[in-house]
Length: 93
Length: 97
Length: 146
Image 1 (tube, chains in turn cyan, purple, blue):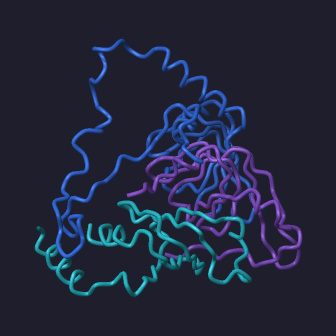
Image 2 (image 1 turned 30 degrees about the vertical axis):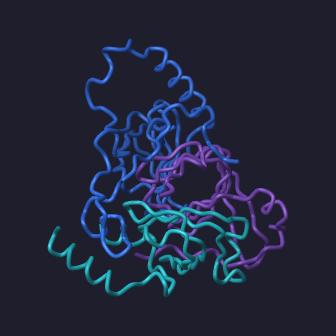
């Protein structure tokens, strides 16, 4: 649940989602669900010359199972809170 | 929080990227929890570096969720403005887990 | 409309099934289940490279090996007929709500003010899992796009 909750806090921020087929999509995080499926708005593919396959897509749903990385905005990371939340989750409360 | 459901895309034209690297465009008629999709009037867009994008008619398809990478909302205006016949690119790589 | 309802409606129809390993199976659907396991009759199997063929009187395919299914276009119209027919037969109020409810109640608890700006039970289990839409009657509006 930690990552689900964490991603929910990032809604509205710009992220880059790198997929397991090497495609990287940048956009505004619109929502996330318990499978870590992600919806992005205002998307653009990072290397549009190499990957013109999504030129006419501006909003998309990405299946959680194909996500390799999510590049986070620096202001979306608060180490203190993450530490604390991680410990709480490990304790199971 | 806004929902991650595909519900708002029902009856719209979507562009699906599958795990084996295909790009399928069609009208979303239904979906379920596992991201299984019903695509109506669908066609595949075959990318190559030799010739432009070639559409291949597929018709009514059920795509299994675990074979789906991305479901994009196709901006029809934007799509109409693209000259697919002159668009050349390598096909997408398959997803490697 | 649910993908598995469409598949169920395709019983008796011809279809093409491609597996994750690239093999394709052409045959008539006898039956299927909620895992997408399927039973085909009068089957032609084609190898991944498309140059070898096998005929078999019937076969079973485990759902999780399937990549996609190609279904005859007219099947989608039959699903709609069926959903309409089923809603005609809706039981009168009072007999409803037996069996396995939709479980819309009692969902999504567990948010009780987190700390430090996370209001959301961050790392405490809970976190509202919303009911996901699954339209049963494919038709009609409520798509809410401006």
